[in-house]
Image (tube, rainbow, N blue to C red; front, side, top):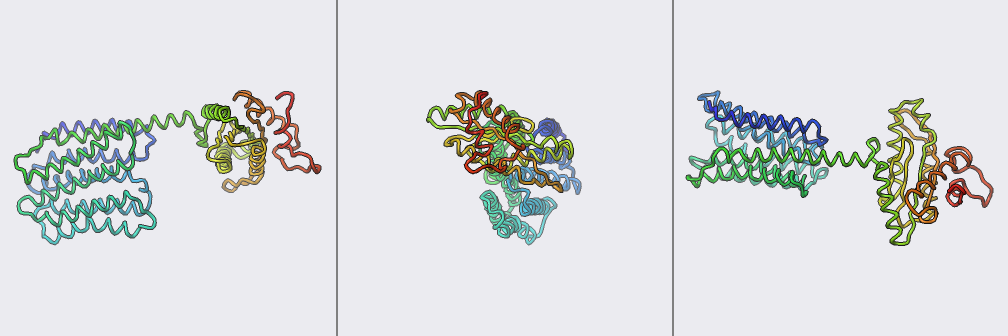
Length: 442
């Protein structure tokens, strides 16, 4: 047995434990697959402790060690596929695991008939190509075709070199492993093509990991070329360090997102709303245009919470946020600034008439029944509108003006949430009246 692999096994086990501690707190959906991959790397080192044992046990250990290394790379690769939940992607994963394992098994278990090697080499490129062609209408992503091209090239290489005397099978095995980890490099470049330390270290680490197998294959032509085990294993630790950095970077990014967004609806929270309002007012000052602020208060939300429960109330708030976001422009801002209060910034170009139209449409949308599961409800809303610079010259004054008008609309203009009550010809609707009026308290 090769007890020299114990330090590597211990190091990878510690790395996997550290990775698991970081991944447990991570929001990255790929972290579980990455952790499984590192468990496979630990299995690779454990199996190679027993690989020197003569006979069937050594052959099985060698097969498990090489297969685990391959499985880890394929899991790393698949974790970076943006469409991996699609059915064709799952088929591709199964085919890559199956064909690579089949080829490694044929090589590891002793002399194999040429037809078996030829069939296995053909399947390595042929089956991924077949899946890509059959699913081209649903999943026509450049990453998929890049991976298919890489595996078709591997298939051609194996058919050309695997029967080479003396070292053909060594060339073939190194080619398979090079393909797996070069594909990891390509997939991570597609998924994490950004200027961060974690992305750079991980992508570079996978490229170095693939290069190790390339150099090992070249040793068949350059007998004096030799790699020390420390050099062989160094890229693994570089990749592990890079992945941990990626998880930490994504956790920091997620925490920054939570600091500026409402966790329930995903809309900007009060902090981000105030920042965007200040920016909108500054742009309006520079360009001499107007900015409108709408404060929307849900009239019947408390009754929904009291009668149907907070779960239904949460669903209702999420639905209202979606409805509001779909009504305004991309340049505008919809924020949740209170329990049942939403704020809308209508950025330039805008005017009072447009703000009134938007406010009226929002109330009309909320007067329609909302269907949440088997529940249907009408909630209604009250709106306060203030326009910069007519109603206030700064953000605080604009918020006060809009809040007072919303309060006036809620308590002084007919039933709450009813902007279309009957009126005399030529008179203003409640929302038009409160938007254009200059109350003494404003």
